[in-house]
Amino acid sequence: MPLAEPHDDRSSVAEPVAGVPEAGADASTVEPEPEPEPTLPEPVRQRIVALTAAVLPGLPADEVPVPLRRIAKFAPNRRARLGAPVIAAQLTADPLFRQRVTARVLADAGDLGAAVVEGTAPAAADPVEVAALAYLARPRGWRELIEASGAAVRAEADSAVVAELVREAEQRAGRAEHDRAVARVEAEKLRDELARVREELGQLREEARQLARTLRETQARERKATEMLATERGRAARAAADADAELRRARARLAEAEAAAGVARASAKEARSVDDARLWLLLETIGQAAVGLRRELALDPVDTLPADFVADAYADQPGVAPAGASTRARDTDDPARLDQLLALPRAHLVVDGYNVTKRGFGEMSLEQQRKRLITGLGGIAAQTGDEVTVVFDGAERIHGLPPAPRGVRVLFSRKGETADELIRRLVRAEPAGRPVVVVSSDREVADGVRRHGAYPLGADSLVRRLARS
Picture 1 (cartoon, rainbow, N blue to C red):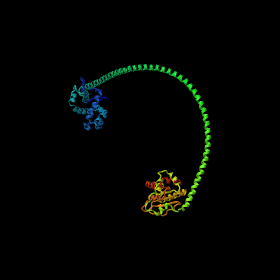
Picture 2: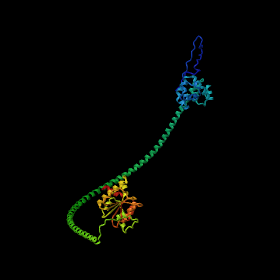
Picture 3: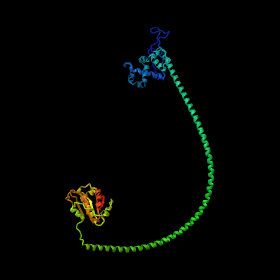
Picture 4: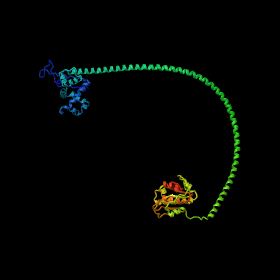
C-alpha cells in the first residue's frame, strides 16, 4: 500500500514564488500546493515499515505516537507484521515522528544514509534500501530516487519473469524431447507387438485348419458311436429281460429258503425246550447235592461275620493276604459298576465315611454328614440284602449317634489308627472268594485294598447311588 503524507517539514513551509511579493506587501502571498505522495513499490513499502519497526523500541515513550505504543512492545517479527498498517499511516500523517525515525535510521545506515541525504545513490547499493532511506530522509530529488528504485524493482521482477519463462520453456523443451523418446520407444514396442500379433494370427489360422480337420474326424467318430450305441442298447434290453427272469427265479428260491428256515426255527425251539429241561434237572441235582453236603458237614447258621471280629477284637497285627486273593480285584472307575458289584451274592460294602461325606455333602456339619450317610446306607442294605460297614476316623466312639439301620455296621478307628488302616484290616479278614467293595477316593486306600483282592470304587459312585435312592 502507498505511504501517503501531505509533505514533510521542508515541503510544508510556504516558499516564495518568483515575481510575487511576500507577506506584508500590498499583494497577498500564495502558497504552493503540496505534491501528492508517490506510489511506492511493495518491496520499498515493506522495507520502510521494517526500518521503522526496528527503531521503534529505541524511541523515548513520549516520542512514540499513542497508536504505536502498544505495537512497540511486540516482538520484532510480530512488530513489522502486525503493525504495518498503523506504522505506514503514522509515517504519512506525522512528519515529526517520521523525522525522529529518520534520524535513527540514518545513524544506523552509516555511509549509505549520508550518501542518500546528499541526493546520490551508490551504484552497488540495493535500490530498495536507497528508496526506503530516501522516502524517510526526503532529500532533494528523493522522488527520482524512489522512481529509479521502482524501475529497478520492476526490472528485477521482469528479469525474474523472463527467467521463469525461459526456465519453463527449457522444461517444456526437455519434456518434449522426453516425450519424443518415449514415443520412439512406444513405436518400437508397437512394431514388435504387430509382428508378434501377425505371427500369432498365422498360428491361429493353422490351428483353425487343424480344428476343422479334427471336427470332421470327430463327427465321423460320433456317427460310428451312435450306431454302436443303438447296437448296445439292443443288447442291454436283452440282458435286462434275462436279469428279470433270473430275479423271478431267485425270488422263488428265497421263498423256499424262508419256508425251510421256519421249519428250522421250530426244530430249534423244540431243541431249546429240551435243553432247558436238562438244565433245570442239573440245577435241581446240584441243589440237592448242596443240601446233602450241608447235612453231612453239620454246619449251623452263623450269627457273626468276619467284619464283626475285626470290629470287636481290633487285631494289632495285619494278617497276610490269602493266596490268589488278587485275582478278585478289578480296575474300574465306572459309577454303574457299584450296582453290578452289589448284585453279587453275599457282597460286603465297606465305605470310607468322611471321604464320601465331604465329597457329597461337605456343606453340612460332621454330625449331619454321618447321619445322612448312615441313613442312605441303610436303604442300600435293605434293597440289596448285602453286608454294609461304614468306617469313620475317631479316637473313640462318638456318643449321640442314631441307632444304625438293619444290616449297617458303624465303626470308628481307635486312637493311633486311621480309618484307612481299619478298612484294610476289614478287607484282609474276609475269606478268599467273597466279593468285597470298598468305596473311597483316597488313592492309597484304593491301591491297598486292591492288593488284597477287593474292588475299589470312587466316592462319586456312591454319592450318585444315594442321590438316586
